[in-house]
Image 1 (spheres, rainbow, N blue to C red):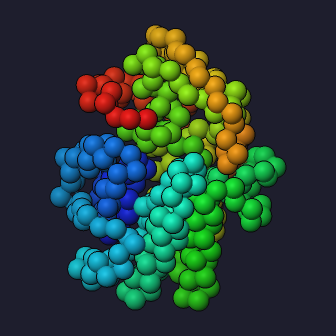
Image 2 (image 1 turned 90 degrees about the horizontal axis):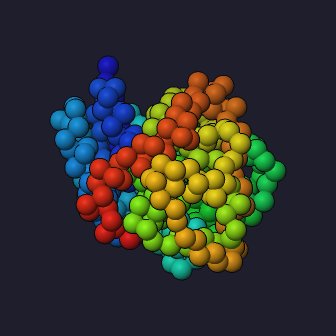
Length: 328
């Protein structure tokens, strides 16, 4: 029997892929997004157009809405609920930008989550999947496990995501909501965020522009392909009580220098790098322990780094006529 889900941030990189996979299952999706201009809105509109033309698109309903707007969110729940689960993937992302504009991060990532929890409580919706971040693990021993104390966030972004996790925990305890917190590790793939390193590097190499690098490029990440992240997010809809679950590549982390080298080979061009001092809010390394995801959700990543980079480059080249105008 098909289910009905509310997916927030539906025009975003990860949520649009989650929505597609839910439609593939025959489920109904109500997607909301405020289409903000944190990055070029043409990318969000492109993803949304893909969703509206997707097989089973008749089961997809989009509403332009900001989860910070409590009254409009309440109206949406009344008009289109009840929902079998809410997947909250709407977020202000980006470590550096959160230092320039911290208020909007707290408003979206914490208050927006609270607004959703209140609407869920009022309507009796008992399942929340909440997207969170590997940025919370700054300074911890690797590979990162979910039981590590993450009480010293290095940025307003990380602090706001932690606040959302804690608010969800309180609603689990008070109102018996079932909550899966999924902490994402460096997601990449076609139609990715232009402020993330794989997309940035592809564009700058393809257009023969200089890459601005904070640090010497030895900093490394647990890169995870977007389709795998979407599968894990959907797997987390099951009943778990309250659990924090890492969704990452689970492989040895890969340096930014290595990513650039692989992309240069795929694109067939060398690039210039302008090195800047390492940013105080950045992490040197991330690496997910994904044992819990394997045991609890039966999930592990399937797409290799090489395959994912190849698909990302191909998507950029196929859409280069307009992507070359998108700022990174």
